[in-house]
Length: 475
Picture 1: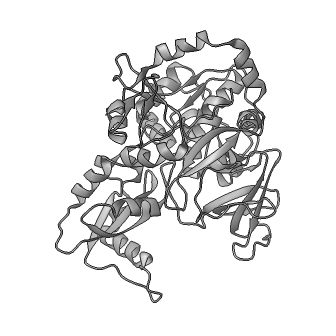
Picture 2: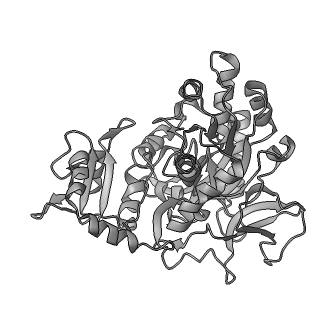
């Protein structure tokens, strides 16, 4: 009908949503009552303390000026909220002719989704994705993976992510098979679903796959014989070998992608030899083109050379929603999207992802902007300065860490600051290690020496820097 969907992560908290809800310009907010121990109706009330019902039956708040209706998926919502099921029934009274007219007015190039992703700037970016690319992407993945109508799918990845949505849920829809998921990932629950439901295709990422395999190796009660293929990013030799040991011959593939490209851009093929499937991220989908260039000169690099990955093609976003005056366009004059990712291309066109040119963290599948977290920390009344960076972690790949300079005379513990974060931002953004200093070290150019801060943090943590702290297990 031409409406734009804005999927939001249920792990977002007050400070995440305080920016996203008004920035998106949403008119209808659909939320659970209580989910993952969070009362979302109370959270909305905290975000909009002046929320009221207008005589026409719509709601209003100065905190989210565009908001007209709040629909709660709960039996007894507060007075300012609509209940989900009566809200659905309202559709029965609508005119079929008006709906058909609205449908015909939708153009394939119109915006279908507004998806938020954290990048290298201080605030999340709203990515505008087209109907055409959203519809075409699952079909392209289905064809590359040789999926069948009898395939059965599983994912634990958030459906607010391009990965979980386009190559999880909508991929299952494009094939016609069922999709299984759950509220929060647990390796035991994942293996039970795969075993009992005879799952054939998994959409995941290495952290979750390794958790599943670790449990399956010690508990042989799960029957994973139906599991044939899966797609993930940054799989490696260790993961592929463990998959081979646990489920036998398989067709798991690597992929490379990002939200601005409606998810997956490059994908291995099931027929590729194993050493190619685990060492590289495959070739671009048909109609997508990639280059690897010198980040300074923008000139193409020879096969095997490391440089910035550029992408162009039908799946690219329309642009960012209300990016602000200081955010440069990620597209150059020829329409190439500059990813900020480091990679190389071999002579046959397979991409290898090597890390990031721009500073951005990847925490167990979640993108985290150090600048965004640093700005949040500096809002604490006792924090004078905060620097955030990533440090290695055995399970999540990397985790946020922070160095804090307090205001004169102030006292604040690591636990207190983390508790402050837990109430206001998503768990994957919270620094797992916090170090307090009297003064930030400065470089010769009078900027904070973040490299020195990170080196000192790693030296102080020693071997434990790569070990996850169980009390902060936030997946």
